[in-house]
Length: 233
Image 1 (cartoon, rainbow, N blue to C red):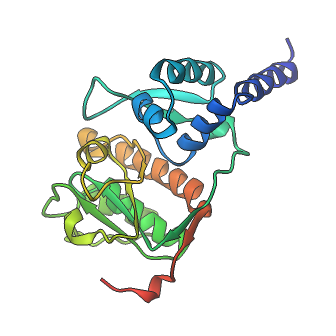
Image 2 (cartoon, rainbow, N blue to C red):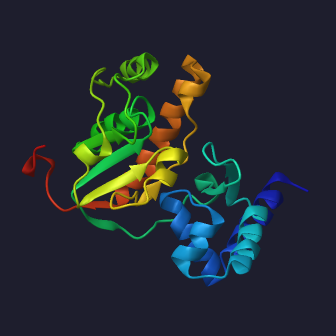
């Protein structure tokens, strides 16, 4: 089998997987953030057994992969492989006042995501934690500096002190996504592995790269409600 023919077969498998409206709806949902099969079933109003069938088809087509939660190990999250469907464009998210990235300690992933968002989009972004640390992790500060970004080492905050009603809240860790079930609830979830667990430069570089790719994918579909200078905290 030639490489070209194998590529054609792979592309045809992806198109076939997307030939069902329910599977296309699942892919649309996963374009902006990760979700568990149960969350997909709830959000799209599908029976769980039907979601399981469609996820199996999408997984076999190479569009979706499963990752086990770093929080509740019994739970798995579905993640889209954007490289398998680079032409997919989700519906815009309009009326966003500001983007706020949330993780547990507000010491690494959320800080890096906010710095990346501000740098790539030239708009205001903020970060917060459900149980914020006293300081930003030194390796997070260092990896940001290596990529030309600045993070305030003492600038950690609690979600209750940061999030406004019209903010787009993005959870960048599984624990924050699972804990925030009240009035402050993430609209999007990015299941980014915690670099603090490994506590190596490589782990922080990997987290930075993953967050940068996510920002580049989601930023084009955000329509702000106002300019970044219209509101101050």
